[in-house]
Image (cartoon, rainbow, N blue to C red; front, side):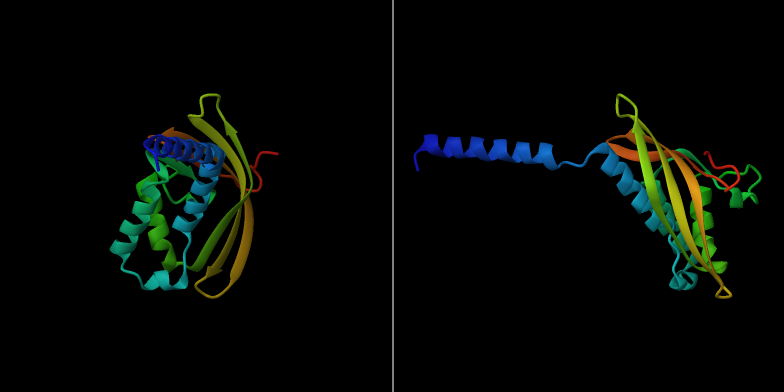
Length: 175
């Protein structure tokens, strides 16, 4: 091949690669939805989690939540009323999730009906979703619940992280 053909081939390949990136790169909305999926995985509880070392489990869950929440994030869940403030930060949430296998065998959450509203600069997003929760208690009794959830995401260093997460009671859910 002549050098001019090689240069042309390199330019053509670079152009194709750049075009493919622009067409198939993840959108902000798809990255936010992926963070919700990761959150569901981080708080998931399996029966075997009761056998895990509590310190190791807390560290593992804390590590997962670190990539999902900004350091000063606030989580408001009605069932966390045992906390004096009524809300939890990232560390407290990790401790609650890590300790939950003492009370439940399994806990699964799935986010559906997700609506993402991005600001003009794509630095903040407000998300409304429905959390579908399935729980099996230690005694074997099973329950399901659906709750409205509001999540405020912010873009930090190219990653969407949660600033606030509010789970509403059925009575307080916005219409």
